[in-house]
Image (cartoon, rainbow, N blue to C red):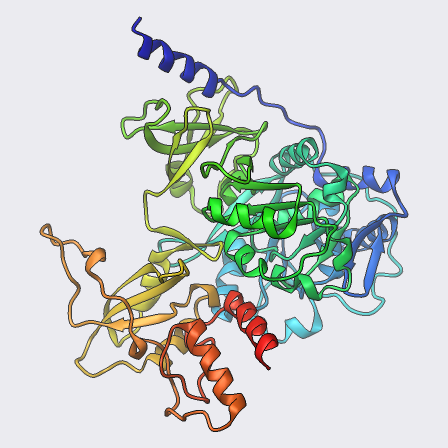
Length: 573
């Protein structure tokens, strides 16, 4: 055998060795209850000036779990959760697990139409909410339970008998869908528990001692932030989002930050408490420059580069990134497998690009109510010894480096990540095409000179008259969450085409000031303070001119830019 063939054969044998599947006998609630027995008086969760010990959190979750059982919640029953961020949210998720059910998170900030679709698609017989949120929700045929007052005080505070088994459903997370509607990813208890055992194997108790939980439960990073520490004795420190880290009353107790690289870039200018020892970054490409800046500014002990779609239960690969060195998403977790296949379906060797397939117990069941799409994305695993094992086709293009680490090369389809949010551009395009004033639409991601990504919609109107972009944006916000609404709209008479009559995305123009939503007649600044504010806005938003009556968010502003805005204001005002 030629030396190069011997090298490839050895690589394939070591990198693609079959995983010996292990299914732990517990469910998430069992890991939590075991920790309650070990450290009942330790602080489990903190929200602003409130906190609960493990024993207190367990008792409140038990009371709600007993109540839920009487409402018919048992294994495989999906329970909607639409609550403000607070301790009741953690209590509710644990209670659903204890009752044997699965939670379906619903963000109160989502448009009513999107919430209505998710409620109908998930067919939840029970919805947990609060009096404040309930007033804003669409009608729901199931039972609505409003958490308030002392209605659960008469319920038992003892652990309910366990009904769930590892194969039962744990949660359903809705992700952006290319067909115009979000799709629900079904994750089993065994997948979450496998992931949590990996967490214990990698993170020290000192890392999990104070985990900043700033991710919405609608996104998979929250699984690590909530159940990682609660399974192994740490403390969950709730934040509205990670950008509010420095405003937390419990800031000095934060030992681990779990977020996306774009949010981390916004945090680098802030003073981070000395207790932070670990930074987890996922959801976007993590550059060497950002890694070096974290080590330089914060003096943390480790920066983890984590990769994984919702379909693989939060993370599938990880790397501890050094101060310098090539960007890599690392190697497979102990509970996952990673195989890179070329277009013909054969394993690649190092240096050869291909599509990443993920296997192992962390792989999801599939998509709720979408059998055909499940069969397309979850395929038989040819290299597993487990009967019926499947791999998830990620749609991500990667290649193995010579040391066995994976290098992320991009997407094979139209899915994108903007500020860590997973977005199917096709979903936005479908909503745009439903507008009577629009004949055709295409949405792309463009970057400015500083690498800041934004969604840009290019539209062809049905009539020559100009579109009212402010009205268009307002209508999109009734159908899409804020992070999916384009920051700029460019009106074209026709799309530029390639020689084979496909849209030439490279020839699409960059948006100008006129393509942003500027809904007010321009009024120049009149005072020194207004001059400072306008100057800062123009610099951050890259728009000139901006009048004093403009809306920051309608001009393309978002939460990360708000952090820059506040920092600049503190310096100059």
